[in-house]
Image (cartoon, rainbow, N blue to C red):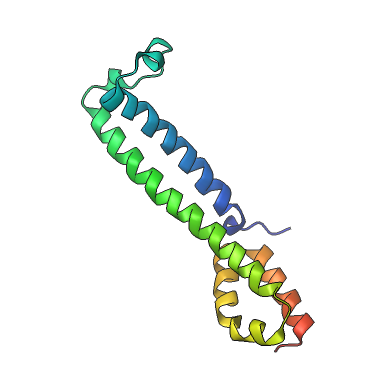
Length: 124
């Protein structure tokens, strides 16, 4: 069985998004909000000193970037299946090039769905 990293891209992005969001919450609490509840439970980054600003900045950038990437993957996957399941050959042929690009970007599972739809509609 062949494994492709593109299959696991959404999961990897979600994990990175979650970790960066956690660091963003912790560093924002230390720098901006100053709530003592997290500090009392030893969830603080104050021990790293001035690096906390860099952690805040990096975690903010990572959260925004990977949030956008997760959004794009889910949007493209939904668009792919909406076009495939639309049920008309004309809509399929009209969007065939876009379907190929999405399938190539998101992995073998979508490539297999595209090849099945191609056989279904008898497209060369």
